[in-house]
Image 1 (spheres, rainbow, N blue to C red):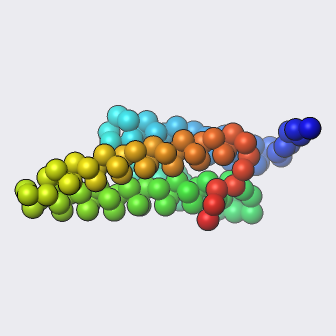
Image 2 (tube, rainbow, N blue to C red):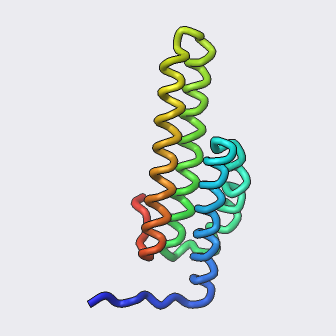
Length: 120
């Protein structure tokens, strides 16, 4: 038997915000290759304290870590691109980083829909 989790209004509000942040990070990934993800990232940092003792905190942390690791791989790809000889490898790094970030956003969104915390 599947029971539905009932959230108080503050937790539900926090959950709704995390949902919108997943959507914003995904839109930034699709429309700007993640370059505008710093905007939802700022909201992640500002609002994660409001949900500190809930499963939602792990979702903020998941989104924040996804951003920073994606940025790291973009910089690594940029360094390879600058070497000219590494351009094919840089393209591979960029593509894999994009796929990895998309996976993390989809996994986070699905786990949020099931009210599950993200691994820390």
